[in-house]
Image: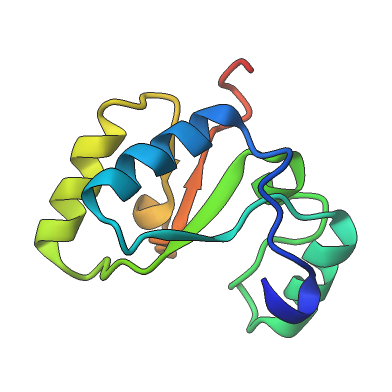
Length: 116
């Protein structure tokens, strides 16, 4: 995460970590670029990013451990998108930010409505 705080995997929902491990088994270059964030780290990121590129502090799924960002993947590739969707099919509680109104293809999350 850089200047806004360290990469934290502790506190990330186990379903996201299981999804990541499965994804990494077929796309070895995949790596987590952001996991759990404190409210202070989210505030730093929110101030640093262009408008609309980071959630307001207190609203990010990263702050509750319900989101990870995964880099090392060319999300513009139709073949990669197909692989990601196939792996997601094995993890029904994990959703993909690729489908957000403002696409965030690196973002994977477990919605609040999904029980822990």
